[in-house]
Image 1 (cartoon, one colour):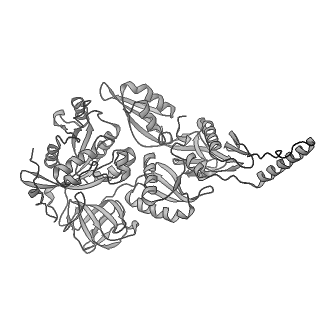
Image 2: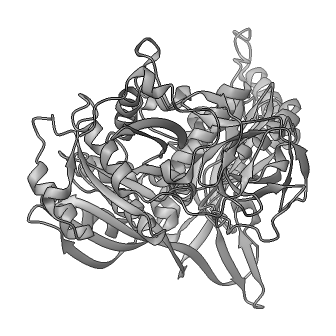
Image 3: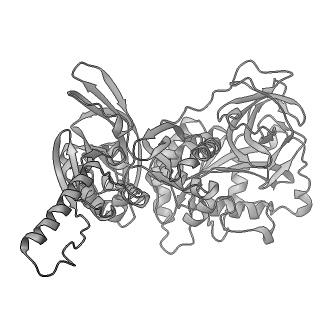
Length: 620
């Protein structure tokens, strides 16, 4: 174990480019809530880059949402010095998210590294997302350092979980480091192991400059800030750089490293991770996965970029105030820069006006984007019920791609195909029965089951994506007391018996409330939606029927009673015909009003009916 570096030794890390053999680039990968951010905090303290007075918990989680929810949403890069045997090394660490919805962040981070710290909770053991991230790192041919975290917990079982990890990656149980992100125990040994075992970055320092953009953010004052990993050559301040995919040329105003706050340097050489500022305000100029090169001596071949993520869940975003539409467009442009997995295109709804059809990687991703739009850009927005992509084949063999229930074609349908995922569920063996019951209720097909140990089971299922994007994860957690974990990947599509359920108000279809559901669930969806709207929509001067229909067949109905005025209040005494005459007059007026009146649905009703707890997500 090396001694902690002194301030004098830390001062020797010059702001000039660091030689390749002294660089180590690594990521921390783990399941959600296994202590990645806490371990990163201890590393920042051990290497001395954050002063004790500036230290706070989850230092690298910059967004309020991350700190409130206790999850990492954005991967964060930070450079730390570490002294081993009198030599100061520069460690570039990338702290990554753990939730399945943000696996694209992990994918981009791993592409900028040579090593990965596989972090496993000593109390919970290997989880589904741990396996997914591990396989991702193995595909990238990264050096993996297995680490057991939270060894200070009374419930920790390091020996048992070390045996699980060693059987998984083929190492000896005694080679697995044991650390505590809370107390800092074992962190210096881990930093030593990173220096000793993670290979130095490869790349030709003399070749034309090539740097991969792996992230970018928008700064109100400085424009687009681009995070890069330099692969070949070197970049220096004040030189002109070119983006290979867009052919755009910019002046490099500032170049530097994040340690953990931005620090300008004299340049970045091959193998280094840092940031570039060109002063460009156009957010479309900096594309994640693009290659940056020198305009004076450009590289001819771009680096292999990242695969564009395929959105799994679609939802409409509409401003509550129609005049906010341009602001929503600008806000989405800036968020797209910070979150490359977000896709969007303009859309019009009869009920909600102008908005955008957005694609997300999952329901948590949708929730986070919506919350960021509201917080960071002060927008009031309505999001429609999430849906997935369907392929509809008509009787005349024409096909339609449906991302929105309003696009579902009319007429005779030959076949509807829905996306399917291959899900991996890790659960304690006592919950196998309840997990199987949940998967079967969501139209799942079991592929197999493996016992990782006497108490832990790995189950494999194919499930329709539409069945798991809503509340499947919540149901799984509640049925297994929080012990089960889920990971999934796309696995093609399948034919299914799906129908479109329309909601009619006073005979008029409201496109925002339509949904595509399985035939067996159509009645329960229609019943739930009509009951909910009956409570949410205020009473009118006339009776309003709320109907759920499949095609022309009504499957559920509720009636919003009319507001009644007591026409007979002043009519006391006299003949009964006088009273009847007044009632008939009122009846005629109601009839005329119903013929020409339309039902105004208040925004609160849309927000409540289309919220995350929309009935499409309930157990069937």
